[in-house]
Image 1 (tube, protein in one colour):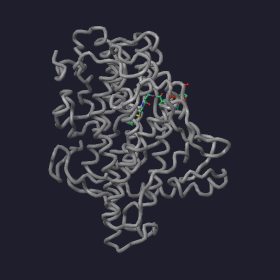
Image 2 (cartoon, protein in one colour):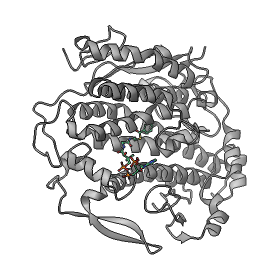
Image 3 (tube, helix red, strand yellow):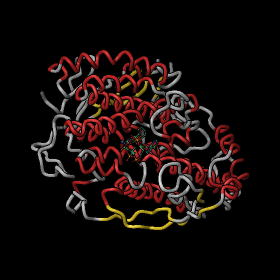
Image 4 (cartoon, protein in one colour):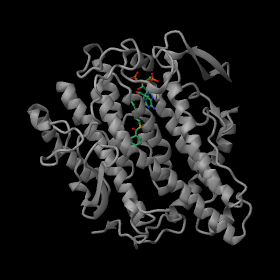
Length: 480
Ligand code: BYC
């Protein structure tokens, strides 16, 4: 078998030699119709018959892994693709550091591994569910195609986790794979597992913020799992990361293009005060303070996805060699962390303080810190657009204590600068920190679909280059 190239002949494209593994092949083929039912019920509403110009992974060689073509989404080739197996890979961290990486699930860590795989798997279909109505308000065919690309790839990421469950976890793996198709984002009785995946994605600015902030949590968590001593998980997540990069590109450039259009229109109209919201909105673009509020919302919801700052679960997963740190293989220390400490921003006697705690217990926070730095890079790039147009406004990430529901700050209210405030004070100022009903109504009023090739809705600038270098007026979606 050539691990680089994918076997496309069967029902399920793969590079894991499914033909040589009849038990897993049969289990996946049994799961497949339920997946398609889920996709048809919960995938992009109203576009299942349209031809979409999508990339499909045909190889796991990073230099040329995808091909582009028109495809109806239900016919997309959702495959099982693992990055190539490294020769003689060793467990990079934890109590087993330096031992041979596991090719089978180590018995004592079975429950922990299954839980991490299920949580990761649960987020993938959840995001498709959250985004299912957005096609109808796409600001262009280019954006519509990007949305659908993200959606089919999240579907593929679900397949990736389901493969691990079916292959390595027997009966309970099969049950978990079924349950992944049963839960629904936002459902009162059977919600998705993590908070941010039960929120709505009601408009395109939310979608871009979600792909910037929340997909970036995906990147960080996948990076941490890519270090895993359980080699099949490492190889699966390494390939997922190749696809994930495009999702964050969609978010970063989507918000960037929104900012660009706002700046262009402000300049044309001679509006210098970015806080003159009414005047800016009259131009049919999204004012900068509202963009900041949307960022505040998505950033704070996403910080919750990192779990508690101080976590014995995270310590156990690291010690076991199951979930590492961001770029563990590039870090220069003992990779065991048994005697080091890490500074944690905590709440002590009603005050925010920084305290050194044992590094093993602070691994969720450490990953979150790497995430914050990564976000800051993108925000700085957005601010460059504002500088280019000489607009006196800078976007910024709110304090980590702001609007939190998990972790150290869940019991208190803090403003965007990290001042602890009373519940009353918070209520009074809430609408200046987070999108208010009228902000949402305004954004919604702009969400008019634009389906003429090469045309864009009023509030967003065109991209600098097309997907797959296609020209500006390329018909990315042939709407049925
Ligand atoms: N909501 O010890 P703690 C993506 C629970 S995004 C609800 O701090 P731990 C994507 C926790 O389960 C990436 N509950 O937890 C993006 C635990 O409950 P139990 C998804 C929460 O385990 C866009 C208890 O609180 N992947 O891929 O250290 C589009 C104690 O917590 C939450 C992963 O997350 C929450 N936010 O850390 C598509 C990777 N936080 O078990 C896709 C896998 C905590 O005691 N997951 N709890 O009843 C993990 O690594 C960890 O489970 C977590 C939490 C980081 C989520």
